[in-house]
Length: 213
Image (cartoon, rainbow, N blue to C red):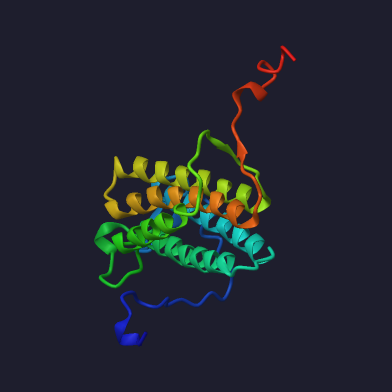
């Protein structure tokens, strides 16, 4: 892709020192320079997106360490890295008030959501229908993807809460909703590729259910 073909601006920053002491009073700056409380809804929303990105990086590292005789896991790793870039783009737009958004500022669009749906449909064709809910833990990567899924759901809830009081791009909520679905499909798909059985929910495996044993 040529520079002239790029939809979004490249980053324009130079990080020379990590600490500035400007946040010591419980405030931080949005992309437009506005000082806001660190526990504000907008900060919470893109902070949770950042948390999700970090957990996804952990899962991608685990995936890279797994043996792969089919190259399909490597393909999933490529998807996960793309999603990490998309999450950073989402954080960029959430850190910016609507009046400060630039036309070529990084963001998520419905193209990202459509791509997730296409990939989920393809993976789902290889999976058996579920007859029960699943528990995290079929394998390490499965469990880490479930952690990502639950953090993604929280990010979605944070974004919905923000949308009640401030304007946000509606495609951002759609993207997180679909990404949480994708993470669930990925968690099942990696067990399928690794030939590891999923852990199904069995209500009577509880202490109460087993009390008659």
